[in-house]
Length: 203
Figure: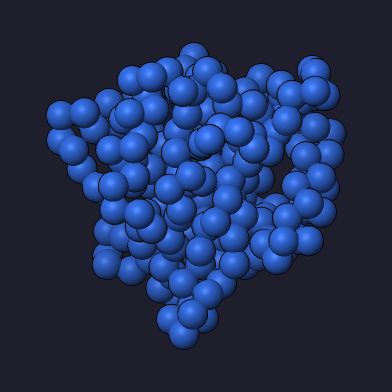
């Protein structure tokens, strides 16, 4: 696989991450990306996502527990952890911070082509007016120098959504306040009856 990486995220994985961020608008949130390398062109398919935390976002014990559980569950389904999602606490913060880089680095040790997706609040806010089909998140990939770099500006690595109308579906979910139904690992650790797999979210 060369230096130019192509990532394709499924509609449900994409929407779940954004709903998680909308549920906790005043907090930083994060999540994991599950997928596989597919096809002759080595596209990295992001098939599923798991919302992680909204309060204990930088705490190592909780992170290690969640990584073990998630990895074990999805390995049985033929999926690996292929990246990390982060939404900053502040609306005007578009930097990849230390926590995001550290978790991204950790994932890269096991999956060198990992993606780091950062929510772009400006694109998300503008979505109802612009009706844009492109993702409302920025893709960062880890260079050989081990520095996370914004992709796509030089026509290199890119992120696309598998289903072209995903943003329209997202807007419908936002208008119906679907974000209230998202369960993350923080919720699960507080109350184990809360299912971090969110099996009924899109039913």
